[in-house]
Image (cartoon, rainbow, N blue to C red; front, side):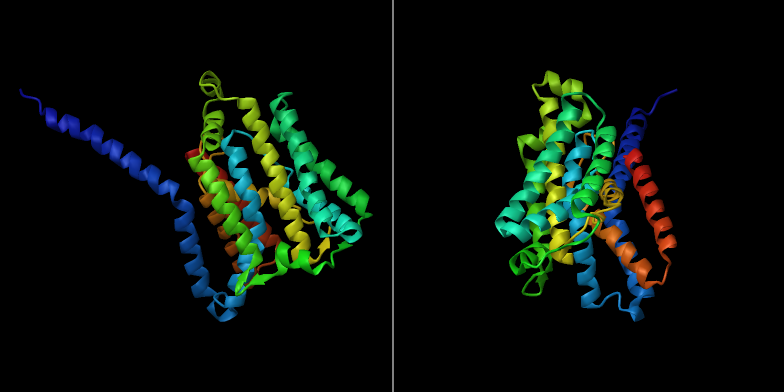
Length: 326
């Protein structure tokens, strides 16, 4: 009896191709999901103005700040860490930048906001990378500290922001028909994409998250990389806080509350692994847009806030499931 060796060789190749196709499909699930959900809402909510220019611009404005934090979170998750303090840092920064801006002007206000992000990010990174405290615990504690400090220094009252230049540059301005917030996302997104995909630092981030032991033997300073990515999220959250202050023309400690969940969901939906070694900035931006479209559609659809929370929670569970599948 003869054996068809060609048939034996074809089966493994077919199995590999099927596996690759399935993997590729999962890689693009956020883009497929975005198009599908957008089309569904466009059909169902057409009479409620979903496709109006004002509503689409509102979606971009509402998701821009989450997208900026999601860019930085892409680096953190790719390095095998997590940052739960980004929303609280944004709220605290809006308060501090607003207070300094009121007393000393725009340059001092922006510098104070960035300095705050650097300090908090350095604390998170130092405790995680050099004292080996899990980033989940460090940033969970920092979330409470930042929120409490924001309440304390502001007396739980909003801090007015009245500087027209700051308001224009950080959230409320338009360059022609394009909102300034979209310009921020485009500029920072391009920079973050290149940094993660095309630079030695990006490759070190992937290596540190994928296999830290092998990365160390390859000469990667894993501790330094983990410190740097948490420093990066601190700065990104500070920028987000100033954008909140400029857009809403006030600094409030409540700003950014709950954003950490939306940010993590956007990043994981976009294709970054919860377990390190894999990340994409562009996917994170699309993930943030997807969440923004869903929130906007639910509001236009007349769902109550409690129902919106249920839908958002289901989305986060879906994001984790997709992350594990990858």
